[in-house]
Image 1 (cartoon, rainbow, N blue to C red):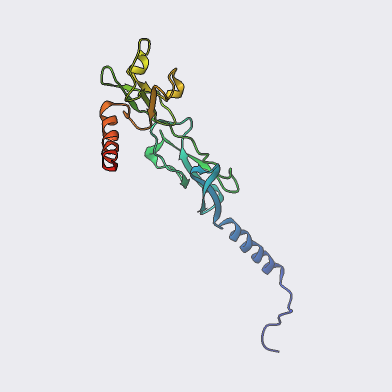
Image 2 (cartoon, rainbow, N blue to C red):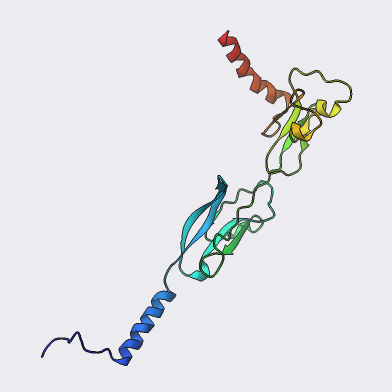
Length: 195
C-alpha cells in the first residue's frame, strides 16, 4: 500500500545518523552555569546565572587575590577585559570547571587621615574599611596624650583611649577640623531650632 509504514524498522544507517545528530546536539549545546556577582548578602553568596556557547568558555570574572587597594573591578559572567590584567582574573566555571569559581575578595582601600597638629594628611595602611580618630570635641588633652591630640588612622578601640576621650569616623580625612565643623554645624542649628 502507499504511504510510510510507522512500524517499519529503522535501518542501521539511519540509526547511526540519529546517534550522530544527538552527539552533535550535545556538543554544541549552550552551557548554563553560576558565577559570583558581588559581595555576600547576610553571609550568602550573591550569584548570577550565566550562559556560554560551550563548557570550555563558561568563564567567570572577578577581582584578583590578594586584594589590590581601591579595586573597582566587578564580578560576573565572562572574561576580564584585556587591559585589566592587574586587577581582574578569569576562571573556568560550569561543568568542566569550578562552580562559582570567581570567589569574592574583600576589597581594601588606600586613604588618608589628618594629623591634627600639623594639619597635614597621613597616608594610612591599606585596610578593608576607612577609619580615622581624634579627641572628642569638648575633651581637654592632658600630658601623655600626644597620640590622641595628633589623631590619625584607625578606630579609638585600637588605641589606649576610650569613648570618653576619643571619637572615630569612617570616611577619608574625617577627623580634620573642617570635617568636624561641617558635621556639627547642622546639628547645632537643629538644636537651636528645637529650643
